[in-house]
Amino acid sequence: MISLVDCNNFYVSCERVFDPSLEGRPVGVLSNNDGCIVARSNELKALGVEMGAAQHHLAPEIRRQTVLLSSNYALYGDMSKRVTDVLAQFSPHVEPYSIDESFVGFQGFDPDTLLERGHQMRNTVRQWTGIPVSVGFAPTRVLAKLANQVAKKVPAHEGVCRLEADSHTTKTILKQLPVTEIWGVARRTAERLKLMGIESAWEFRQADPKHIRSRFSVVQERIVWELRGQPVIRLDDMDAPKKQIMVSRSFGRVTNNPHDLREALRHHAARASEKLRLQRGVSSGIMVFVRTNPFRTDLPQYRNRIVVTLDRPTDDSRDIVAAAIEGLRHLWRKGYAFQKVGVMLLDITPKANRQLTLTETPQCELESQRSERLMATVDKLNRELGKGTVQLGLPRKGNAWSLRSERRTPRYTTQWQELVTVSA
DNA sequence: TCTGGGGTCCTAGGACCC
DNA sequence: TCTGGGGTCCTAGGACCC
Image (cartoon, rainbow, N blue to C red; front, side, top):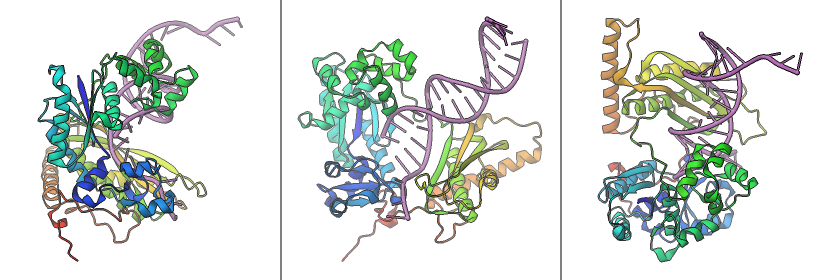
């Protein structure tokens, strides 16, 4: 048996831990640049506000009753870690799957004790972190996801539900469930399944796996097996080093100023380099991309990308930033309102097996040791004194690219200086 | 005026080889 | 009417997740 533990309305719940006056009210957390709604409290869902709705599309009467907050990822990331730490008390097999969900394995545990353990987990997470969670048990990950949905929706379960592969209950649920509600089946696949006469999760489960594989892919075939109770989906190790590292942001305002693009890119490339060093990798190829705002169909559109190859694999921010800026030189065009620039580090390999090139000289070796020390120092300062303490060039004030984030709450758990008591 | 960011896996198809 | 067969490697793009 495996369980899926999912935090309820995670970002909103994090905010409520530190501001209890948000309890019982419609609350929404906004994406970067305060653009659209990425997390909703139950009260906001009840008002009919959809996930991903643009903030400015909210009806005035809904906006009036709703508390909208900018996202506070420093807070959510830290709270997420706390939740995972609590889960680790209950099983040696905790697989964090996203910022608000973990699979927790219970192989070998007495099946009769699972529901009780589920309730203990739920209560302990709530008590120690303040975050409400739901727990779903099942023989496979796809069914555990489903059990979790049931736990969340049906009050009688009190947040914990267990589904067997072949029980009458499971069959009833699958018959009522549209395929798109299954983990891993989204709109495109559902459209094609419908043409084959498959609309419910139960019909999908009854389909011939080999046939599904030939019409779709091995991914969909696995889902069929999992719906039948055969575990075939294994999770990747979430600690495994990334194969590519991307950093990009939309601008606060669109801009054609090359200074803005360069500054933003320098910032993103430096951030990507930090992530690279954190996983002890080196990269030998950098992709830079730019684009205008695709929603502004009234304006001329432009999107482009370029790959810059580095002479030798590196993790030095200076090399990576320089290569990115070089790439950008080829991408910028006059007359476009740019909305986004980003960088992706490719061809990532472990630094430990970095290959020496034929032209490697003692000077190169010396230089790479200096680079190593410099980057380690930069990372240490930024880690201990706060992000952005040491940067390659400072952003100008009032630049167009910096994020809009007008309603962010304090970073309660990671920044002492933001824990100031506000008095009347 | 305005619409997120970061990632993975899989497949198709082209280039190339013998 | 017909113009091999099989293989690898790489890239672009689709689909999906939260």
